[in-house]
Image 1 (cartoon, one colour):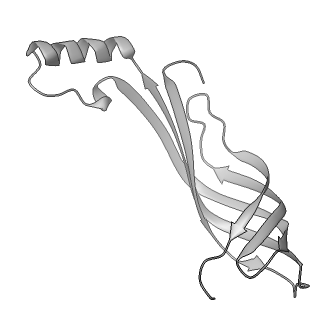
Image 2: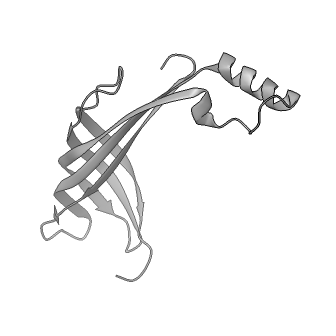
Length: 134
């Protein structure tokens, strides 16, 4: 993003995961998740911030400047879904290696400024640590 701009994405999804009877080492799965997604884009005005902070330091401003006084925030919130699957290699009851996870996501929300976040795909790999005896 350009200087003095930031953005973030928050997904909150829940749904079923199907895992066939796995062998002792390999554990494939597929899942369908439904929920929502929020996209936020913020533009800061550093000159306005400096002006407000100088006013506070000089005693000409009656209150400490808040972020909303020098920043503009736009956001959208909408329905979202994700579907995909992966393969885990079980090391022991507490540790697994997620060899691959491929997931497609779609969100029904409008563009937020120049952020077009309706469709996405993810390919990930990582380590899974299970805590507890369940």
